[in-house]
Image (cartoon, rainbow, N blue to C red; front, side):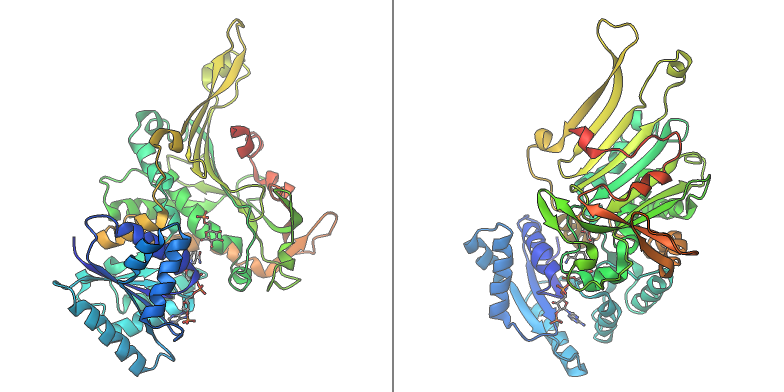
Length: 499
Ligand code: NDP
Ligand code: BG6
């Protein structure tokens, strides 16, 4: 394993402090990642090397690392201030990188992690190019955080600028959902188990529901969130990744590009589902409410949110996929902030078997419930005959909980992703054409955002406007979300019934 230099732009930001530093710590506990240096970079001169090491150590302590171990580990860290980012500042940064590299026995792998506001992604990559730090290509990697663009055009423009310097094989676009253990297991579940592989298509599957519910609000992120909204923040990336992993065809081999080719193909075959009379999309914005016994403010009352904001914090939408596998299956995606609980779940609803319909048995459809977080696991809901009764069926839940079965904590998503970056495995990173295909899918919805109108109760919708329904914090979102479900689909899966 090669030694490596890990350069975090945005070295003292929230992401670095809460996620990246603890994840890097865990990666470097592994024997193959022993030779390394960390360089935190930002414009501010609030740190020198010594005080940055204190900052790093505190971040680790906050993540549960023993203080002595944290301080020892932080001795490998340094800090570089970019100030006003003049050419001299960048030259100084370049010399610092060269000095750090010279201290290794062999030239180290370089990882430039852009934990920066998105507007700084391309300018920083261009400066790295001017310094020649993108070369040699097999030794230099660029990691780009989300959001990647705010629509198709801006995502394309960002890719073009990055590609002026870094080749696609050097770029690692983060969607941290791909680093989650249960998300990676989706392909194993589908392709390594015949009972699922054989049934995973249209005649057997009735619908697929993907829910990512959060009980948190937007916290102090109004500046970002109010311009983004739920489609950009969650749907275009995290939920779409889940959707592609459920819907993609099996790749010929388990190679990064073959997997990503299949993901792009299914995205290109996906559309917003306008079939039938039912609307394909329902949007919502959280109002005041109560969560876990605590009163919480409305979205419009959050610090920094304009009191007349129309930004949606909830979306439920229906997709279809135009291919042989899925032509009559609906995909439902649902996510929102300030819902009653934090839960991410994928529910595969099977069709009722033909014999049961012929015998006129009152059966419930089978369900496979994949619980992504928390309390990770699976449930298979099937019907069994009630003992002593000739025709009565009982619903039973065959289940597995990761915690009971593996008896060890799951690796954190960022730990997995950082390790893959160091190993040069791009499977869990989003390729440029994949980002574009997912923006393209939602382009028609994003074009409607200047017509949003927040409505509650009896409010009349003005002509030509798109409703954003107010929902009480602590509820499962606007009641109107039920309108997007196909008439014989039943209701949304209620995660509460699982317990
Ligand atoms: P913060 O605002 O907390 O930190 C941003 C950091 O970037 C600061 O250290 C800032 O320091 C530095 N910075 C800003 N502009 C520049 C620049 N031009 N050159 C160098 N450094 C700069 O942001 P977060 O850490 O929360 O987020 C960083 C990125 O990660 C964003 O793209 C965000 O969307 C993404 N992300 C964050 C998540 C989180 O949980 N925080 C989750 C998912 C994604 P200074 O001002 O001194 O330069
Ligand atoms: C981030 C979004 O990408 O993912 C946040 O910007 C959201 O709004 C978060 O809260 C959810 O991630 P997780 O891992 O907590 O489900």
